[in-house]
Length: 484
Image 1: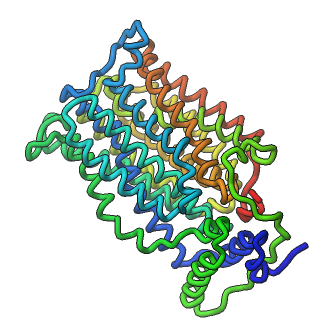
Image 2 (image 1 turned 90 degrees about the vertical axis):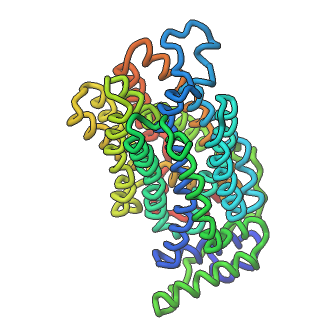
Image 3 (image 1 turned 60 degrees about the horizontal axis):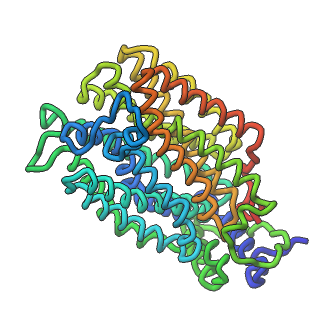
């Protein structure tokens, strides 16, 4: 049985579906793209601070705050020493894991807009404090707290975007969002490279009394404060409001968006598509993702994240270090890395023309295969004419993969538990990334860079097969149809 979307808004069981149908008819409009831009800029410096790790770690090592780690560690205490490069990366991912696993419920309970605002303040303040730490323990603690705030922001933005955008523009919205977020990496690398040149001998030298790596972190924290007023442009998610028995508030937000889009286009909107009769409304529970309806998706995405983090985060985080292992200097490695990362924002932008035309799962599979092949090629030469293009293509494909899975996972859970579901499955990537940092450090020390990339390549090819056979299709479907 189908009912009018506007009539269904008054019925508690059908209200969310009706709100979704009205949002889906808005199509691609300037009004909605302004919201996408505001959300994306809010997360830009989150991405900057998270991706700055690889370019600030060499400076921390040279300044004596972090140790390189034992090349031939013979005890667990040496392998899992937090005051090393591997320990710094592990701490980062530990904070992101805590955010994803334990804090997903707060955005489902208190709203997307509120938690987006809190996360923005959290990671910017923690970053500023981290920049002035003088001990390894203080540095590790504040990097951990910064990562929690950044992690909360990531899973909240993903759910926010999927709920605000119409079904035929979700892919494009995530492409734009990830293009802006991907810019955080080259911006951070450029900041470190510029400071390195200014200080003549690396980012461990001082400028106005502060070492270069501290300036890199401060730039990210101050940037987040600058974009703070953007939160005023963003309304609460009407889908979240409807899912929490706040239909009048949801109606108010949707009506406001409808009026703006109609003024923008100069004509009335088409009628919303009729919605199928919905089951009685129920409130979200964490254990619902382990019920018969969502357990296959939960398991599939959890395994996916265990594998993708090994290669995707491993390559990005260890790129400067791997270049140094090839025999280049820190300043040269930062220059090479900056040249490679220039293409990262182009990956999601290139997806704009096929983001909502090609099935999401095939975007993931295709980009994973390219990451695997180019990552392995990267290890076969010390010639910058091969290293830079191979690394650039690797980062391009990684950016496509990153955009695709962020959009994909947000589509596979219902609004009532969307952030909790995304947070839970995403938390496995944090565990994997944290532990793989120690594994990469050990393999690099024992067997060299080729062995590291065998690990990366195998992980990517395995997850490509996994998604091929187990990933559901999502293209062109409403969120309520995908996850009732």
